[in-house]
Length: 556
Ligand code: GLN
Image 1 (cartoon, helix red, strand yellow):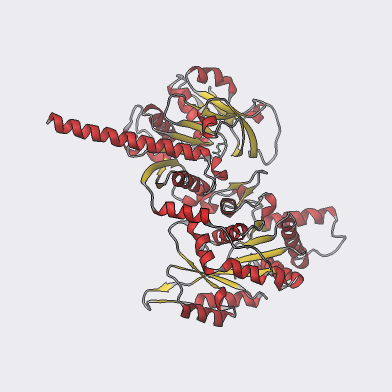
Image 2 (cartoon, rainbow, N blue to C red):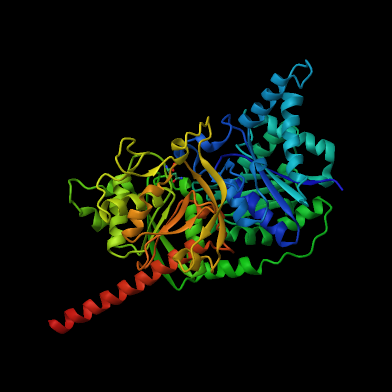
């Protein structure tokens, strides 16, 4: 049996949520017992997003095999169980890199190497490779917007796929915008018509239109779009803006898009079971209370740079039926004006929990150290991720163990106390290019630690990494002597993976990025426990306030 493909393209404008739409389709098809796989092509020339600024690109999502990928793969993982690897995200840069390598090797036997067929073949082979991984259906998202010069080879490749595999094995889903025009008090279909026409001009007739709009599409509008765009009326799917992204699969199911795709692909599948998603959305709609968390980082004005982190915290809150109130604080704003100045503390007082996320470079470090000191001393739940773990160790070394100049060699290469350093550099390992510790690494947990309790008593876990610097074990005795506990390490003991402070309500730093593995239906234990501890702190604080109020009244 031939592999079946769902091709997802986008029109009119970017940022309509194509990745989320693709992921939600995957979720629906998976809920019907099908095995889905998802992949994304990005039309830019960077080989991968690993070297791009978070402001440019948003988060770099890391897969188990250590690929640095587009953040849409995070959506795919949160909504499905597709096995994602470096094969599931390819950029134009990567495709050309492969072709040029072959050309230099003489693989093309003297032929002229061209966009068609060589680039398109490379693209099609990449799709076939992912589809051959046991999937009933492969969803292929083409990044960018139809009409961009950069995405043409990808669109040509999917056009050829239809030509080769036929209608029963390929379906074209196009995401467009149906804007509400205030002056006319009307939803307008023209941008959609133009976008479909643009696609048609390169040989692709859309089969399904997912229409993003702020209001529901009336029957009239759907009929109009169907007539002008040459699709069935029921193939005009309303993709209305929702409160929570986790409502998207439910909305799509209501619009019947999964049944339609199955029909077009001549595929039988049982009715989907979305009961767990429904329960989740119900819980989101009726939270019992809220919990307030501050993220103190360096790319905070652009939320997409911490996409998975935000989702993982949301999952942790949803697991406890809490509404997450997130505040993003720029770490530079928490620095001391002069030695001993602690006025930054006022900015932190209102939060139930504090998190310092990953990041690179020196900017904002002192503000993070101040924040961590506050959390440690005032017993506010603290969760440090990657850079947030490294800064927690530096803070501890400086303010508990008295090493005033403790630092990471990333921020001060000349520091006398490099508590955080580049281990491989010291070992004399010469590395070109990729010097990061990337992807899944096993971590052994110490018994009876906060970490092992969170992971349900597990002794070994696997988590994903993306960093260069490490805890320096030369300082282990000093720091553990001061009360820091190392509760997770790689099995050979080389790398420290988790530190915590026993006796503190919740103080944990991990060298890996747990946010990459959290799913709404499977919240990550470290996030779940951090949010739980933050909520306990909230309750305690509320109790204290009540007590103070009572005392104030009784002493008046
Ligand atoms: N800059 C630090 C390092 O390279 C932390 C990286 C991160 O937080 N992902 O080790």
